[in-house]
Image 1 (cartoon, rainbow, N blue to C red):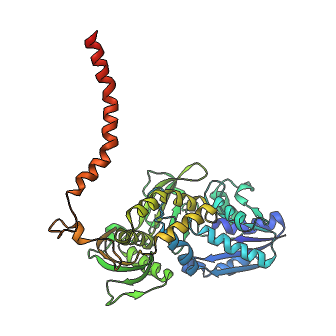
Image 2 (cartoon, one colour):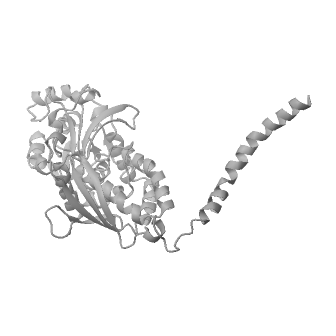
Amino acid sequence: MKIVLAYSGGLDTSVILKWLRETYEAEVIAFCADLGQEEELADVPEKARNTGASKCYVVDLVEEFATDFIYPMIQAGAIYEGQYFLGTSIARPLIAKAQVEIARREGADAVAHGATGKGNDQCRFELTYAALAPELKIISPWREWDFKGRTDLINYAKAHGIPVAATAAKPYSTDRNLLHISFEAGVLEDPWAEPPAECYVLGTPIEQAPDKPDIIELAFEAGNAVALKGPDDEAPKRLSPAAMLRALNKLGGRHGVGRVDMVENRFVGMKSRGVYETPGGAILHQAHRQIESLTLDRETMHLRDALIPRYAEMVYYGFWYAPEREALQALVTESQRHVTGTVRLKLYKGNIITLGRKSPVSLYQTQVASMEDDAGAYNQADAGGFIRLNSIRLRARTNQQTLPHVARQSEMKLG
């Protein structure tokens, strides 16, 4: 039997690699997706082989991640439960897709992942496997083995000489990629406990953020950020999606923006507490919204906005490759054709403050909106008829409710 394991080199997948070889007596091929973890991947191939993998693929997916997954999601304005920027959620379908491609190249029988039986990631991985390669067997060790928790895994790793960063005193579950870093488990399982200092990686604590703000400009074309003018730049620089996120992570992280501490509703039914840092993503979301405010038709915006919770759920639950997400994405893409222009922002002590926005295809008409002389562009008297027409149903409802009362009063007088 040959198994391709989605491998990160962390506690869970390191133990899983060894466990798969022992339990299934199988050849295990490790696959690690480079999604912007940077220094964290340096020792992954050697570690995988030392733990028993026959091969280890480390595949650079950073630009694909930014271009085909993060940017379309930003265009949709997707934020789960009003707070979570979906940094882990949006990465899983790409990891699973690349894992399936390697499984087919290697002639593997099965794919395996390190998601727990309590979390969302098992759904995201397995729904993608089902959509793209239903013929492959799926192995989910957390749903099969006898380990009860991460303490058991730490002990197993120690007994088998597997080096891992997690300890019983600091058993965090972290996930890092180009869009964010997340922290779960350990002391964070108490929703009242303040996150420890180690839960700051991409961002600066507000108390330590600079006293001087940075002012930046972001240029958009068809809903995508394409150029950035940083605080030290004389002119905007065109950047690829991945380079844009790296630059915004650095700028936003310096000022502590994009930090979220929330209790969220998992797909499997329970509530969980997560701490997230998404500096670049937070900036992109706000900047994108501001350029939309100038260029997106009102009813188109309201229709898209009504669908944001549904789109965010699709990403969070793992339905990236579902027909409903693809159909909704087509609507989003169409809505973004004229979302072009520039936004100016101030970054300061955890805040992203909008200073201005402009667009060559703006729908904003100064002569119509002006509180001064509109030179005949808008006849205020027309608003009276508009309001009367919209009030017809309200008047009718009030009359409907009043008539029975009047009738009863008349009957009482007659009696």
